[in-house]
Image (cartoon, rainbow, N blue to C red; front, top):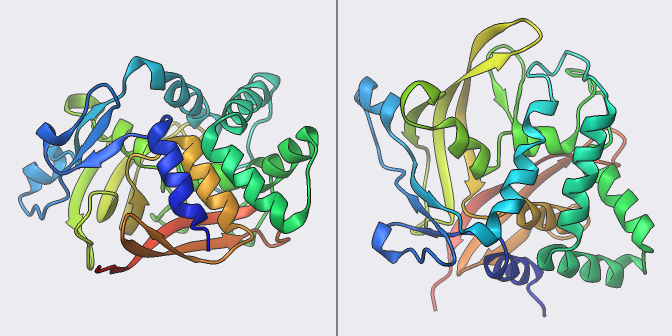
Length: 282
């Protein structure tokens, strides 16, 4: 039986994904890599200064993927109770990102797999299907103008001071920079972590900017798990398969439950993140 999740992961590592490593010397600069150091830290000053991703090397031929997704990060309001602005420029940014993702090998694998389950899509139907899953706005009892992309890739202020979503390693990395640009206070690993740098399970707080209220807001994440090194299209492909497929995956000899909730109308993703289950022994 095919392991579509492993196939997508491998395709992403051949494409714009970056290999997660525990030691700097294991990284291959030509292919790119992420050095992971998710160790316990208790000193308050060290917690503020500690970087989970101590070095990230993105070779030139992979950088377009990261630039495209990064352009979308400022398109959303922090507080999920605030309506989202809609403008032509942002719609074009979404289209550019989505067309780039669709052309990638991970998303081609994703499309072929889903077509075997649901029947063929035209190119326009496939684009519309992905747009509905990831970028269609919907409301819940606790928020308005929500999207799967915003929650999973960007993060949002939930109830009280809770940070909702925020399951894309690259977004965390950008916010966890040294010096005055450091928005993250790292609180250490949480729960059982597997012996692999492919996933981190950590607690932290973030000093986020609420542009509507024009102020900083400190938000807390008591426990967050996210895959490390996947490109935006790699994460998009994994979650899109999971939207209509089984929840347990084995990736690089580690078993995960791919946790996914849908929007109230079941048309879109609400959240997606990995939960470590067990390491697979030969």
